[in-house]
Length: 226
Image 1 (cartoon, rainbow, N blue to C red):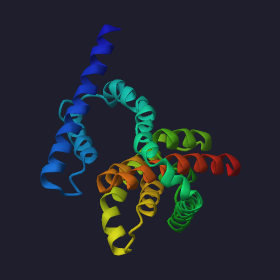
Image 2: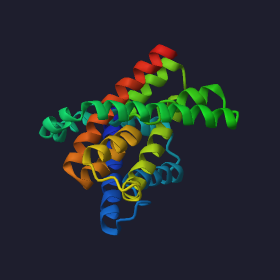
Image 3: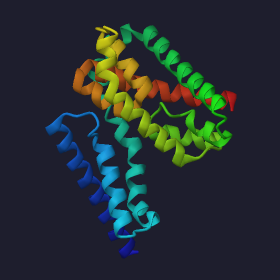
């Protein structure tokens, strides 16, 4: 028992250390490709491969980190609370934007899976790609998809969203902070929201709201149509 606890603690500290290194490199070079999550994942894969450490052993700590994702998302409520009055004024545009994002996400997954004749299990696993990981995993369980595929798709969606968000806003000449936040949060969840917070506090608040609303509405749609 004590050995399992120490093993879990070691891999948790290792993961956090690799992420901190990735964060430092990202801030120093300011290159979108040097995303902290990508860097830490790459380093972990190398370490597990070189020392032939079974994934099951590493996941003893990984499960603890994954379990903390839910509470961590709640932290996004801080900027949301600070800008609550402004967000109340834009309730209808927010719901409309989130709905459009969900429909576009579902439509793209359905169209591409049919085009490339993707297996149904993979298809079901991709439907939750645009919501935050804890919600995505639960919705995939409801659908009977593959959780590993869902997590990978969520991470890739978030990385792409956070990388291209500033360019999309600039190219589209989007000036409204709420519109920026809803677009980012509804399409690229927490990873995108971290970029939104860097852009502006109000953008981050709107993006944080979009995460919750998008996740809730996505799960409702899945329950209804599953």
